[in-house]
Amino acid sequence: MRENGTAVINDHIVREYERQAYVKKCLNLAVENDGVLMYLQPINDAHDGTLVGCEALARIRDTDGELIYPDEFIPAAEENGEIGALGEQMFRKACEFTDSPVVRGSVLKWIGVNLAPIQCMDESLADRYIEIFESYNLRPDTVCLGVTEQSLQDTAVLHALIERLRHAGIPFILDNFGSSSSNIDRLKHNTFASVKLDRNAVWGHIDHPDPILPHVIKACHEMGIDVIAEGVEDENMVTVLRKLGCDYFQGFYYSRPIPAGEFVSRYCHADVYTKDAWDSGIRR
Image (cartoon, rainbow, N blue to C red; front, side, top):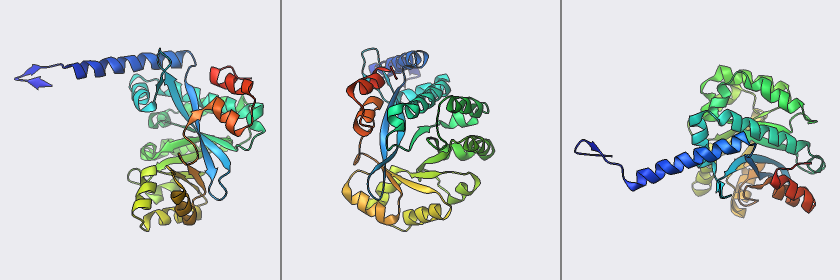
């Protein structure tokens, strides 16, 4: 802020700068010490509500043990170049989680891990992720990667990445579809297993129904792509979206994102030891 040509730094700007610096410090510690936490949000079958999959969401803690959420640390990770290491750590933890005996014996079929747009430009990512995936005893299609429409800007690079990983048994989900300049034609150029409808697009249809969302769902099904509705928060939404033909639901109606240990305890019928082991980072 400037007054009469002089820069003025107020308390708000100082506090904001200090907070950003603190978040970066906590992020560095989490990435360096394998301390990125994996929270999971269930994805349920639209027809009977049973658990099918889940989305892995990163969290970190500050020096007092309080959670720091992605809206703060993801921009910091993108700015300081740690987004790749953070994302790779999450992918490895998702593979480890899926390979654990208690999860292998549960109803969970797959787990989704998100890629930041900048990661999709990394031509060496496929080799590293395939090596991680193959180091675990995982069936094909049990760990998926999610990309957003922003990642579709460089179609050639993304297409090569998708095809390489897909053939290795790692399918892709197009996340937040409908959040920007969505184009069904884009789906023709990349092989996506699923499309996740952006929650704002879902809420918009619930508030003001029109033919757009039904058309999108129908078009996806005609291309053999499953549709996940994000942001499902009440029974009315479940009823409406089920009639539209959505295949899966994700949202607070079923569960908020929860720690991996709590997820294991709730959905995989694990004992207390197993739950505590996952939450403490000691996995057996």
